[in-house]
Length: 429
Ligand SMILES: C[S@@+](CC[C@H](N)C(=O)[O-])C[C@H]1O[C@@H](n2cnc3c(N)ncnc32)[C@H](O)[C@@H]1O
Image 1 (cartoon, rainbow, N blue to C red):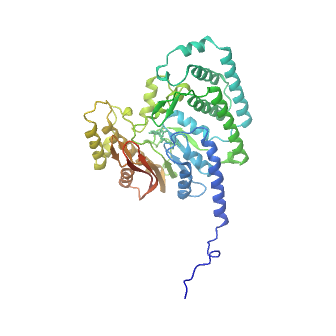
Image 2: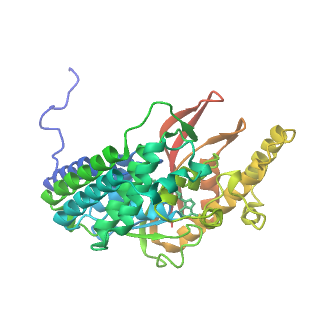
Image 3: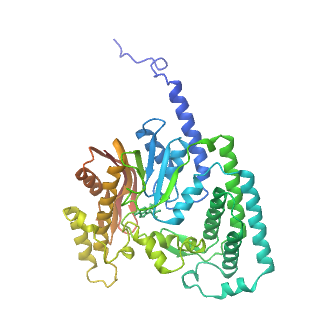
């Protein structure tokens, strides 16, 4: 008797209408979310379709509440909003709060956005054309930190646009937020800075601000028109707050979150206020270094440039040999170098801060809810930091009932030819 093969047609399982609809809705949402993302891209930390896939996998039905305690430019919030979930975003950086807020406000009066954008561009042209002593004087003031950032004619545009924006009479808050976000992104695109992810400067002149700003405003209006056509402006709007993920109690109700999905800072020496210094300054969020310090202090200690004498979250992880071993190994390779930066302590404070985040995540999750952290193992001064395993161990010790690690991609450390997996660490309350 020959082997019996299944009938290739009749044995294909039927796909339910419901599943087909869900699939089609998700695909459309993903395609449209690309449009919103391009308004302000950032150090996302993960592929946007990863957020959508993991949210779907762990959602608790249409009433799902999603939290991203390190929301940055809002990739998780945008994905959640497209899928129709209620989302909450927290970020310590006021610029990122503004960006996430603007990217999740889809019901702005479109006509007003278009007319305000036109007013903004016309007033900017006029101000630059007329010139003013005030503006020229401002350009002459050497702003030390921005000397290399802008070519002089662009700096002049940046200052003029800032004044015009300040003088536009306030109307709809959503429209104002979009204009401010567009200005922040355009000034970056017109600067000579490149993030990779540290700051470097390019020689080739970048386009004038009038060009990048016009392009940004036109794109946003066209994309919002698309969302309107798809009736997506009716989706529940995300709530975005400026806060500290190590202390969520004031921002997020206890036992309320179904899925927490986030990409936290890594112990890789990225200093997040430095990445956004010009945008923070020209939007008026910071004036002095004290203002910068106040924001830095609310951030996870992922960089030795962001450690303070009074910090002491390292005591929360004093009992973790893996953390102490990594810290000691980094001390060994750095002890003879006089950098002035304390990398061994950074690692201990970093994990102490992440301990505090996971502890608060447990509080705000509802029983059975999932916390999902997209993290990658890192190297610091040639020493491997097994971030994924350490966070999972901390989760277990804190009392998460179930845990898993799913590797989503392999990266290579460029400086030390090591393979560094990037994973989702899943923790169920
Ligand atoms: C890897 S980025 C997240 C990027 C985000 N997934 C996106 O779509 O843009 C980490 C973010 O955490 C923020 N952050 C750092 N420490 C924080 C803290 N203690 N509380 C809240 N946010 C914090 C930084 O400002 C930064 O925006």
